[in-house]
Length: 212
Image (cartoon, rainbow, N blue to C red; front, side, top):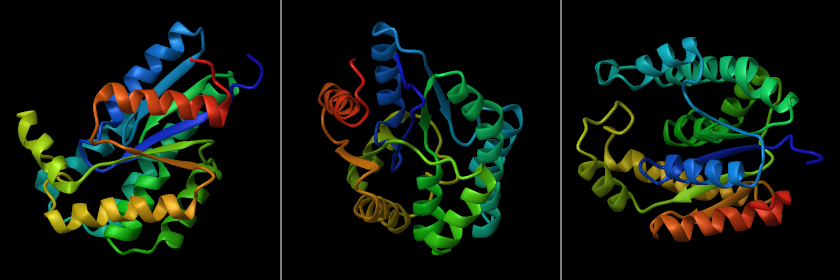
């Protein structure tokens, strides 16, 4: 391939299907002979995984919103510098389960810290790295709750937030999609896995020229 320096995060509310779609797109890319790497946030590095445990631990229910924002940014900068940027420089396509847009929505909007302040914080921390394409999977909050209940495992600190918070998150992603139409592709995550995957592949072909 010629230019393969593409960075593509997957965003959305809880249980919207991000991880499943990353897995499917990764398999499709490998079959097409595309050099690809997938990562997750927070995490992906030894330090990032420790920060993830702190951020998602239900025992930290009293965490301040700014503490949360700063910890996400700290995990993010480690991932960008240790994994994402080196992979991009090697010509890989990088898929990420969440990135800056999560902070813009969860902390900037739902926690009401301000989108611009959170954006400035994260752009400074990551050296200005922004995605080439971002997928946002929209899912009704009630459907999200049903999927969580059917998962059979305990909720983490973010998942355990009240319904009003998760509605703010879903509303926030829709606002973000309106703010960055050239970069963000919104997809209905309430449909079958196969239908959603077909939309993801079509967008990758249209926006990035990838033949999958």
